[in-house]
Amino acid sequence: MTLSRDPGDLSPSRRRRSRGPAITATVVALAVLGGAGYWGYTTLSDDGEGTDDPRVAEATAALTAFLDAWETGDAKRAAGLTDTPDNAESLIKSVMTNLKPSRTQIEAGRGERKAGQGVTIPFTVKMAIPGAGDYSWTSQANVVEGKGAGGAGASGKGQPGAKWQVEFTTQMVHPAMVPGQTLALKSRERAAVLDANGEELRAGSLVGVVDPKTGKGVSGLQARYDKQLAGGGGQAKSVVVVARETGEVVKNLTSAGKGKGTPVRTTIDPEVQEAAAAALEGVKKNAAIVAIDPETGHILAAANMPGGMNRALEGRYPPGSTFKVVTAAALLQQGMKPSDRADCPKFAEVNGQRFENQDQFVLPSGSTFRDSFAHSCNTFFVNSRSKLPSSGLHDTAAAFGIGGTWDVGTLTYDGSVPVSNSDNDKAAGTIGQARVQASPLVMASIAATVKSGSFKQPVLIPDAVKKRYEASATLDAGVVDSLRDMMRATVTQGAGKALRGLSGEPHAKTGTAEFGSETPPRTHAWMIGYQGDRNLAWSVLLEDGGSGGRDAGPIAATFLENLTR
Image (tube, rainbow, N blue to C red; front, side, top):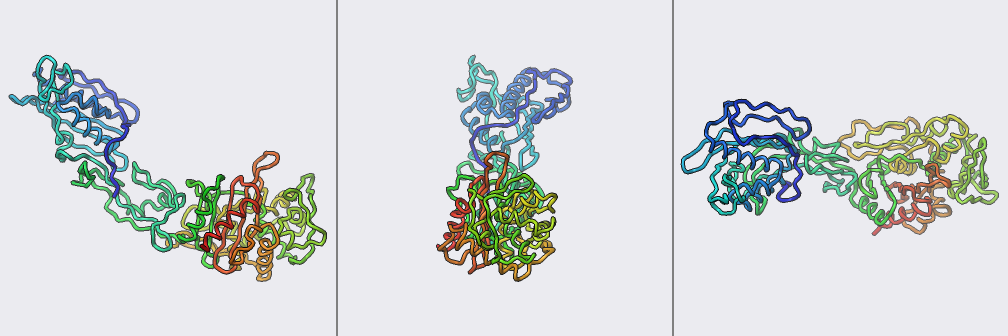
């Protein structure tokens, strides 16, 4: 249970209207005023006629001034029109702060003069309260004449010069209250988002947030599964009477939805999630880590730095050289072997467009396909494009699940590898540029596919998945073995040197993806991979982060080291 209680800055919608001090008019026109917070004006007399008693009219005018101040949230001004300003200001401020109405209308009714007791006047309060809906109640106030020329009331603390004062009591504010109580909002109990162990999940950008005003989920899983977590429709909050000292609910005045929320259970492994989140601590760039179980497709971790956008599952980026896993698979399907010769010059020219290796490195004569993959030689892959048809990358990507719509249980970006529309487009596509797009989730899934030998669609909320997407193509066993060999070589002799010496036989592929139009271009840093001794595949993205091996590699190493501690 969450209670919103007591003082804070007041920011209710204000509604201006004119009320005359005398109630002698026979008709009061309906004022149609535009804008939020403006409700219709009604007559002060129940029967539409004014009163002939000038003292009742004066008392009603005094109460109207008090109600106007209360209505606009000006607790201090309202309190100054009462006989106990301190008590009045404290309670009115408490009620308005706790309920935070978006609109308020308070109308006085027909007053009645009672001998020796002042004038008793009924009034109605109407509020529109975010999360609790429209709420109204009727009460009454006793208005008495102040003493002496200065207009001080019974307490002697009234507003100077005030002839009439409102006798302030807790019951006057709401008849269901007694001294020591106030009005507040009680949030409807929501079920929790759980990790794979059944404990409450701690991952901000994945779980999402609940709007404190409305009590509804507004992002992440809290928004997607709002009805399930809240227990169906109805209001998210109810108006209650609480003890001001303890916040204990004394009485329910309205009801929220009656349904009971059902937890949402995810596949997130708290140990893996914690290791991923810890690996991103202190990272200054936007970053993400995704981890997957290759055998089941269960998403074990989805960490983002900073929180907010779930770039781990929804982000769209050029994958750069990490996509060479797919390109290599396409070339292997065409008959190439890891031991085949693969020249790696400094530059490659395609119709006047120059491609180069990072820092314009070259590999020595006699280098192999395995070498070019491990060191991430762009020029070799670009020059190998002629071995692939225009649909070659597109068709091979299908074996990794790219091109379908994944039913994960939450919003994801599932990647795109279009059929090449030109030689230059195909050349750039071989190194994960041009129109090739992926999310960290997609790239982790590519590594998982190599580990398991076949695509298993990632899943986050198993109970919500109706039908997993099945890949429209498969990889030959020999192709898978070769990819494993080359991804291991990336660590032992290539650009994935940040993982050397780590336990678990990590396999990896680095990536440096150009983006934007600056010269030289800015780059995202990537590393994807899997562990040889356990069911764990992963992807690391560092936005605008430099080099895959140099910048993303150490983050991946920290993540894997965290898992062994």
